Length: 197
Image 1 (cartoon, rainbow, N blue to C red):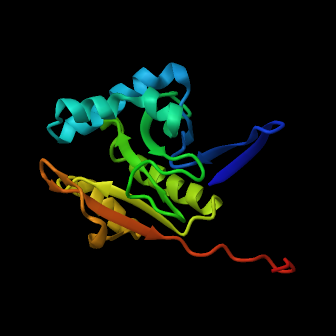
Image 2 (cartoon, rainbow, N blue to C red; image 1 turned 120 degrees about the horizontal axis):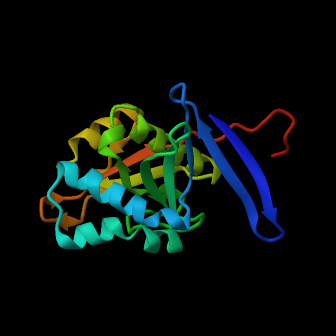
C-alpha cells in the first residue's frame, strides 16, 4: 500500500489518499465525491439486493449515501483504468462512531458493499484492510462491526482477516435474528528507536 498525505490548509488538517495495487490496472481508495452519491447509492443497494431481500427501511438506509457522507466518511474503491466505482464502505470521522457498537478506542464500520460485477477481485478485502489501516493511523485498539446473520460470505472474509465474534455485544434484534458483532484487535504501534517515551 502506498499513502500520500497532502496538507489541505491551515486549520483544516491533512488529506490522506490511499492507493492499493491489486492488479495491473490498480485500485484507488478515496472519499466519495458529492457528484457520486447517487452512483454509490445504486451500487450499494444493488450489492445488498443481489444476495438479500431488503426491507424498504433498510433499502432507504443503504441508499442514504449523502446523509452518511455529511456526518461520517464514505469511501469508494475505484478502478484506475476504467474509472468505475467497484465498492464502498462507511467509517466514522476521527473520534466519533457510526453505531452504538463502537466504544472508546474503537473504530466501527458499516455498509461494506462490492458491485456484483466486481466480485472476485478482492475489493471487499481491500476496503476492509483500508478500514484497519485507518484505525491504526487513528491510534485505535480495535475495529468492530455488525453483520447480519445471513451474510455468510462477509463472515468468511472477516474470519480470514482475523476478526473474531463478540457474542457478548450481540444485543440487536432484526427480522432475521440477532445482529452478529465482530472485532479485530490492532497491534500496538511500535515506538521507533530513539523516540522519547
